[in-house]
Figure 1 (cartoon, rainbow, N blue to C red):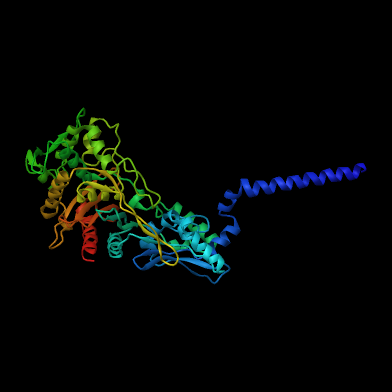
Figure 2: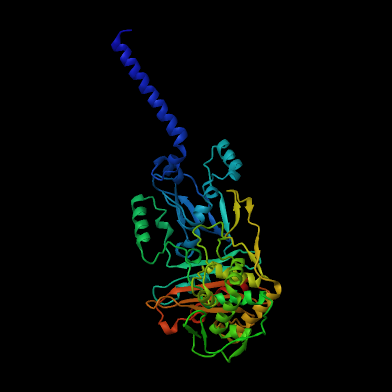
Length: 486
């Protein structure tokens, strides 16, 4: 072989080896990354050419795929987009959120539990289909939650969560402002990119599910946790006499904290029940100061603080009760201020635990996973997370909360013929912005079917009119009625 031929042969061999190495690298090393790359057109075509499964509330599909009239076979559609967007999330060519993300393997048909279905489709030469996801949502309760938030004055921000106390089923979850997931499902990928940038830049944060992703001071609704810690200490019950009066001087400080109305809560010594009825700041500042940060933190964590618990819906933020607070901060934590923050979901869990004899149930939004033929592949079983309080403590707290609805600050939640337990909360923010309004409740008090937490982060309500009972009470009442009267 002469030299020119030998050089060409070696060069061709090197090219062949380079091609072989590159193919091996792409097929084995980079295969997963390339298949998941949202810019991979083959992945996009395959994704939009498969009938994705439905997301169901009752018998109604709130998200489903329908035949498309463009080059892709199917179009994702959402029948009640704004009402359910915080739960369903969106499905787009580059990403998914909410249930669309947490249950993507099922909905896309890639879940291992759908292997037999895929095999049958292959043998019968049928187009593959995704599985269906049945939610725990009560449609009437969700309607009430959404309508309540929509009725708030102005460009409001807020959230609602309703739980079934004995199981942890999420019966309603609404957040405002929200968004239209249909725009993310568009096959006009440039428009999808534009709407994503627009919503991500929106200062109102419409893409955040405030029910699980926003943490704010819980204000006086946290007095449930403070009262629980006090009763669990063995030194108090609903009839115990506790400090009242006009003001409380913070330990190691010259600062003085007064009651929200400037009054004395009915006297220098009042019962725990009366303190809850009138939401006496002095009482709960005193209790938190006496109990100390460790006892308060232990109790908060038993209810779910400093952790997350909702496993089938992403974007959950931790509700926080810091263990490193000094005495003044610890006292302030007793009224849900200082460094204490909570999501509406967390405060709904507190109310639900009291309603459930002290047992904290893991919240869940996915009830069943079904094959395309509607056979059940999996069903969520209720799971207890912790025993937050004893059944005796739960009974004492329930008596106090019923009294608060009957003749205290929570009267807007009254339901004729039904015993309701509830608590208001108004949490101070910065001097530049109005307070946050909270409301938690459960009903019927003697056989709880639903526990609710309402947060009104902002609305066009004058500062002196902002109160948990006034803004959140009617929303909670409507949701409880929807569940009880179903």
